[in-house]
Image (cartoon, rainbow, N blue to C red):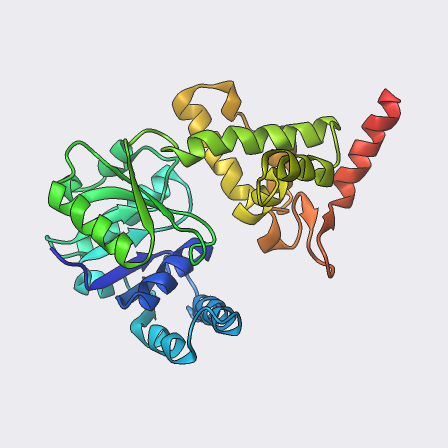
Length: 305
């Protein structure tokens, strides 16, 4: 089976990114805003991202215009009836995702493929909300979607081979590299990444070093392009926290325990770059360390010194 029209449910950073790369690749795209309110913010997010690609010389103006014309933004799930494949990319909540996935399935034709962008929530539990679990799988994109090449493809034992093949072909057409993995919590990347991020945040909280020190150590010592704290802010501390909670519950391993600093920042709405402040403060010209966290580190240094 061939995917010609691709649906995306959820128009946040991830969902908008998936819609954008699919449209650039030539798919007709139906982008459904899963929450109440106008779709104007989602439209603007995609347009701004495409404009940046043009400004950087990565996309021709004509290709940008064609991609924009291929995307239909709506709040109506019934618009998904024309889709061969729909990718759900909504909030990382098991109960919420099960409700949204069931609503998508009702709108899809019987031959449609349904995918979830989660990596932390168990596929088997999500599939329990569906009438056709054999047409369900995980397609885990990475942020920022236009720049990141990897897509983890995870299937249930019941997922049909033709469904997996069609999904892999769609991912490749988007210019992404599909990597197949078992339906284990966290798949490959987040199973390794979440403990790393949580340990870095815990080290910051303990006063082992300032945020810039910890990030520079990993950039220069391990050759990472981005330190773990800056990466956490880019992903979104709310997303890191949700992944840590889910993986901790699934795997019952303390390595996935969310540090108290992470919890406090999320509760305060300081969830990273998208909020203007997280482990770093982005509200000025250049990112600087969050002053409240720096003050805590100085206090610890004074006690230790």
